[in-house]
Image 1 (cartoon, helix red, strand yellow):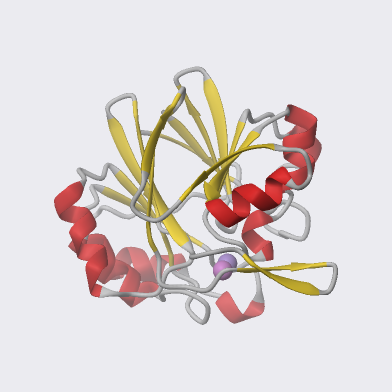
Image 2 (image 1 turned 180 degrees about the vertical axis):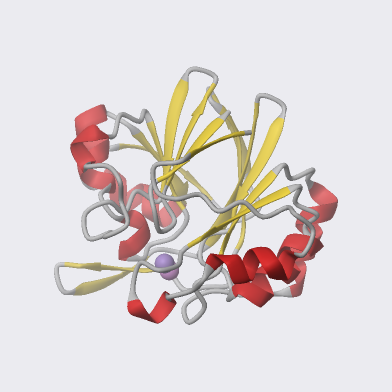
Length: 225
Ligand code: NI
Ligand code: MN
């Protein structure tokens, strides 16, 4: 499995001959290393309804005939544009051709700002993906809460992608605590330096981990999992 970081919370995953993009916020993401027209993904996974996560979902899905996966309300919203979609809900798993997806809790809000209206998009989630014998966890925009530690019991997490920006999510110290609780073998910081309110030095997070498990990915860099 190959995971490429496109800045903010956007990951592109290549596995089992499929391409999956998570939280495709490209336009308006000053850290993005790609253009929307470059994205070729058959699958789009959205962690929650905020605009910096739904991002360019509609355009990418239209140009690739992708299937949108996420919370039921987000899937229905995708369906309203005629997009293929697969709705799920917290705690549910489904095995797709690229691998198994489980939506897990995230402590966060989830509305979409659409043409001046705030649309409720269900609960915010994190996501666990199991493919090619590996397990990765994208935490979404969660704050710290103790149940996250149960992920360390339920899964053997090879790589965790945790937000460290603070203000809207966990900051670096909480994220380091969570990395240890979930027993992630490797941890990649995300959701920082995109906006002034989430400016962080990712090295502080790496140092707080203190065990060599942290990996900083610059936008455009790929991790072999
Ligand atoms: Ni958010
Ligand atoms: Mn966000």
